[in-house]
Length: 284
Ligand code: KMH
Ligand code: ZN
Image (cartoon, rainbow, N blue to C red; front, side, top):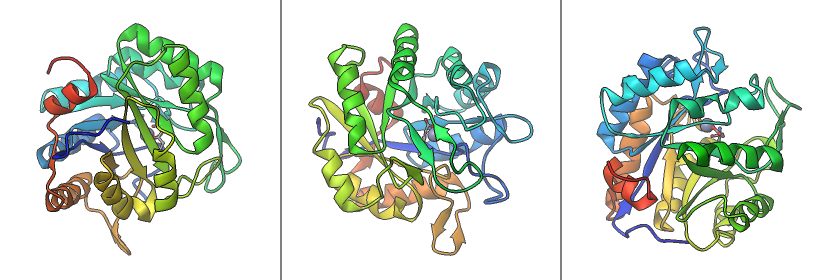
């Protein structure tokens, strides 16, 4: 693992996701204009990376290149936050639809490192399919387009898939690994300190890690992630409550709280330019 500069933390905001709806939290940004406005507010509060999911006009997940391009353009008109598109897409999308977004040329894109099965909600029993051959096809496309993968690891077993890419020379240092804890999927670990510590032990040398705790663990485990020298992700994709019984007002409220905690820990949020340098994304 590579430690971030001690006085810095890279904050990602995951604003929308695939499974949250406006009926769960009416302030969820879904359409390109809403996503861009919210991304700007998050950037102003200290987010360096914006993890992006797109929705169609009805609010369903879409992989449409055009919609992603519109989101990118609208965000770029306001700020230089790093654009990280989701190739997880949503349960209604095919494997090919999930990577259409790469052709909208984000700087980074998510790369999910294993197959899991959803255990609750509308999609209970539906697999979130990420087979080795598909992971390799996704990374090949990302490499061709010069896009840095954000490898999402949901359990210890998925480090075998990370090792597969490392051994085949398909990913470059610094590796960027997102430890996602607490997804309601068969094949994912719970969001607890013990799981977080033990997953950090498996990070390959040359890795910068990010912590994405889902649900109520978002606040305590992102705090722990910062203490342990990681980057963190907050946002409504992973959690819609600011505190017990109180819906978050917007994504920027989560970023502002993360920055307040970072500062109590003597850390400053990395700017997008600083984050590009740390992650090896090229010039700002
Ligand atoms: N909702 C997640 C934690 C992706 O976008 O590629 C999973 C996720 C997947 O972020
Ligand atoms: Zn996502």
